[in-house]
Length: 240
Image (cartoon, rainbow, N blue to C red; front, side, top):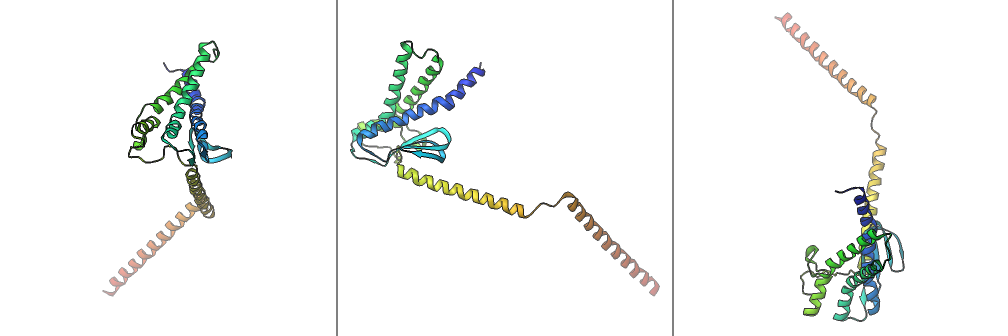
């Protein structure tokens, strides 16, 4: 039965464990790419408007589960270097999980055992979907599939040619375009608000008076037409 304790565990998993595990995964990319002379590395945490950018970290405003690593180029290019780059998040998560498991097995972290068991579970969750070769969104290969292709064919052979690790320069350009769209949208909203303020809505009493005057004018017009009609008929009778 799903209870309060399970709900609390779910919240902790969604807002603490998963973002931290994902950050460790992205940090794995960084640790290996630095060995091969990476150019312009960046770890982006979250999405949407930027809160601040410090060194290689780009912190965004919205939900921090969405994070990714990017770089422009590496100096020492080879199949081995790319295999190591794509294997880096898998190996990093495995090392973290085994280290935590070793500490627990030796009597450490016992006071927060449930938390760390859940942490290790999600670490291996990401390892599973990174390591087992498969195609994911829009036929894009995961890290395991790319490693398999590089080992077997010496290159990527899938039909989706999008970069698995995006370019930092491209990420910055897309961010600037996104911010311009958001700024334009805000300007349009403010413009609509200003237009509405310039045309105040009539008070209910004023509207009621206008309707009453319309009815009064209509009634007077109809009465005058009826009177004129009767006069014409009387004139015709007198003429005959």
